[in-house]
Length: 114
Length: 115
Image (cartoon, rainbow over all chains, first blue to last red; front, side):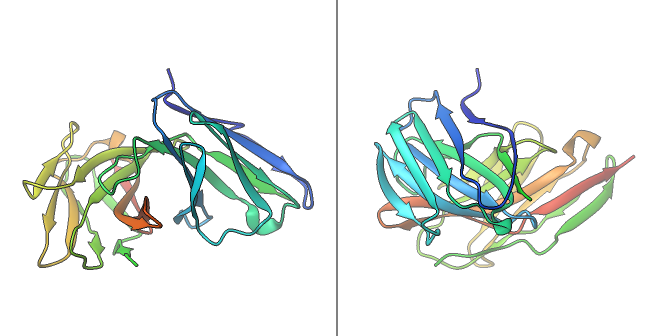
């Protein structure tokens, strides 16, 4: 069983389109995250949700809107896609919000904007 | 804000040779450190962590890392590498922001094992 699963694995789309990436975790965790990995492999946090509530928003453009329908799911919707949005997006989850938590990552969604 | 520096973007070594991947973090009162590994076309997997206690931590596949507070380092080592260790390795420090944890990652080190 995959602990943190993301769909789709690959996403190729045109500039200006709207797309969504889904994430589900079956670990029973109450905190979920979205990270972005750019073309230089640099990883940076975008959002964090705890018990369906947004707790971290790292100055991400408003075109990105996360939604958490329940504790096990955190989806990422992106409006008006731009070339610079091309990246690998990773979902992660952890039990709690403390500094010692281990974050478990999904396999990533590679987004290519043409 | 915390920061992490991985001094080597690429490290090529021969199989069965020892390797060290360097990681330095910005100083803080309490430090929690992680090494994650990303195999080709896969997600990140936790390799090992330092939360407290012994400064030397080990993974199940032969890697170890030593927390050195005076040098603000958390270097990753393996005495003898295998082809299967070829991957991208990320060092990360845990930071609290708005009452929640975020991981601050280094730039990554690509470890390439040559036969």
